[in-house]
Length: 323
Picture 1 (cartoon, rainbow, N blue to C red):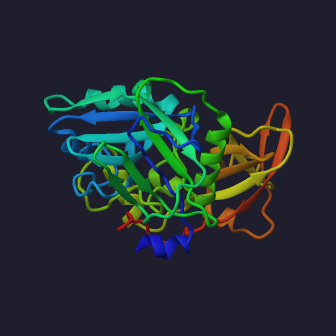
Picture 2: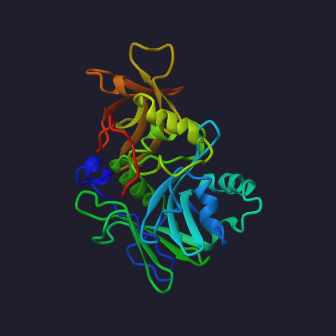
């Protein structure tokens, strides 16, 4: 439904392998980590905590989800895979410790354990993993999971999770490639500088399959639902590029020329790829779509202009999960 409606044929592949065998083309990541939730109540526990429907998720499905505060602000965002009594949450590594602590606070009598699995697995980017169905997961007998988002520009970039603590050299270039693919798809994520900055709709999380509006209660659900059902969402994430010597980072303010009294928005994600900075920036929709609008990011070293473009889906639509 939403995939065909909003993404206009774009796709990317997100692959998760749980195995010791790794493709020679894989490049290990340094900025992403893994949270494991294990036990009889793992699924029902996460159902009560995350923004998406985990209980209704088949093992053959890949979903995205967020963990919110009571005020609906995102503490973290995940790629979610389910296998038996175990659920894997893949997120930015610098957010793992705080997210494990936060989730563990609410386990109480639930029969499950939340743990940082980053030391037990290796994450790797695969530039092209071959064709696969979107938003699906395939598990093999060894516990290897192959999960897909969508193809991108004729290729299927992938992601591998390899069980074992034998570390291989990591490369920030691999992170750049993976995060560039996410930027091209308009998929934002939470990193340390943006913790508690955005409600899910502000980073288009409802438009890329990260929110269910029918699953029931979770922290912040009332705020998220109100933003969905009452009126239109006024702030959305847009793609942007920046060329220059000034480095742009997630969490920085974005300014609109002519409105210098307060920032127009903020940088949600930023990645430097092939000498250019690719961003997802949260802005008022009316300002972002204003003809001739000039947006900049500033710091003590100066300012850099942004070229703002719409993401590859309609920001005026109501969000939903991928089905």
